[in-house]
Image 1 (cartoon, rainbow, N blue to C red):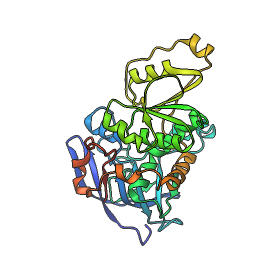
Image 2: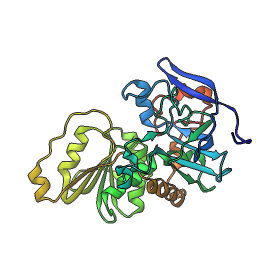
Image 3: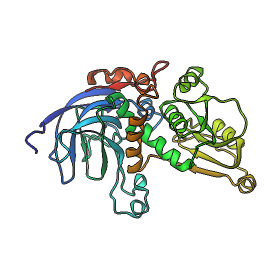
Length: 332
C-alpha cells in the first residue's frame, strides 16, 4: 500500500435495514487503481430509487456515483477530480465500437456489492477505489465541489444526449422533465443557441428551469425532444409533436413503464429519428467539466444543490429534495 494512503476508512453501507456507517479496510491497490478521498457526493435520483425498492441493486453496497474528490495515490496525487460511472474493459467488441458504457463486463461506481472484490465502489464514503478502466477528469479550481459532483452523472449524461440530438442551434427543443438532468440540458441547449422549452408537471420545477434558459412549454411543433421524465405519456406527446426531420432522444426511461405506440409510416414520411442514451462515454465527462467551467457565472448551478450533511447523516437525505433543490449532498 502507498505510504500516504490510509489503512482504514469509513463507508456508509446500504443494507436491507438501512444505512450502516462502518470502518472498512482500504485494500491494496492493483495496477492502474486509484485511491480518492471523497470531498463531496451528491444524491442522484437513481440512488433514491434503489433505497425505495423501485430499482434492484446489490445489497449490501456503498451507493453514490456523483462525487468529486482528491487523488491520494499515483501520478495524479493531489489533483481534484471527478470520475465516470462506468468502468470498462477496453477490449471487448462494444468497447472497440465506442460503446464502453455498455462493455460486456462493465462495472459501475456505486452499484457493486460490498461483499465482492470492489467494496469501496461508491461515493458515500471517506475514500473510493477507482479501478483501472475508470475515466478520471481533473476539475478546475474555479468549479466548486457542489457544482462539480453532478458532472459525473447528470451533466455528462446530458452531454451524451445532446450529441445524440445533433446540432440544436436555432432549433425548437423540448426538454421533458426538469430535474437535475433537465435543467442541465436546458442550460446546454440555451448556451448552444436553441429555442428551449421545458415541460414538467411541477410548476416550481418549471419556474426553476427558467433560470437555466428554459422557457415554459406552450405546445406546438418542435425539432428536437429530449426526455428525462421516463413517463410514457410525456414520450408519446413529444413524439407526436416532432416536425419533419425531428429527433426524439430518450434518456429517462430507466424503469419499467407502459409501451409507447409508434406509427412506422409517420417515422418514414417525416424522416424522424428516435434514439436512446444510457450513461455516457469518457469524452462526455470531459465535455461536462468544460461546460460547467464555461457557464459557472451564467447559470446558478450551486443554488440547486443543498448544503452537505456529514456521512453519519446520509440516511436523512436519501429522500426527495425540498422545492428548489435538485440534489442533496454529503461531505464525508
